[in-house]
Every structure is written in structure tokens, then in C-alpha cells.
Length: 80
Image (cartoon, rainbow, N blue to C red; front, side, top):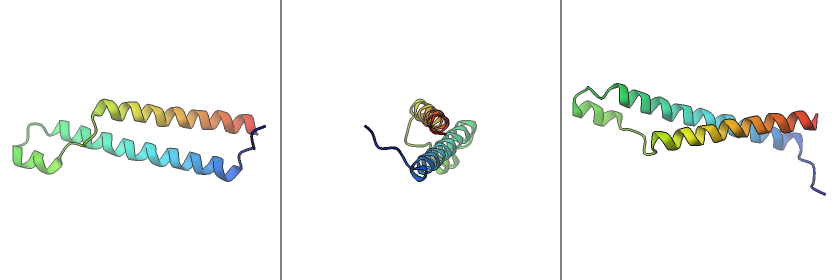
């Protein structure tokens, strides 16, 4: 029989998912800024630099974090 998860572990997981989602959102905002400034001179655009991860990969990871939060909420409701 699996050992029940403590409340602190549940909350730590939620906090980690929220933090991860915030970082992903920040990176997506950088992508948006980079794309919005495509008409700037090359020197200025180089200062902005696009994130190293592709936008499609960020969208996939973002969806995973959102799914993780939904699973957390469902687990929390089942627990309580």
C-alpha cells in the first residue's frame, strides 16, 4: 500500500509548479518581445537575443506545467 503524501509535500509540489509556470511565462514574454522587435536594426536586436529554447518547446512545457497543476488540484480534492 502506498504511503500517503504529506500536506507539506503537496504544497511544495504546487509551489514548484507555479514557479516553473512563471519562468516559462517570462521566457515566452521574451520571445514575444524579440518577435515584436524584428524591425529594429540588427545591433539592437542582438541585445534582445531570443531564448535558446524554441517557442513550440516552451508551449509544450507550459502545457505540462498547467496539466501538473490540474492534477495537483484533483489530488488535493480527492485527499480532502
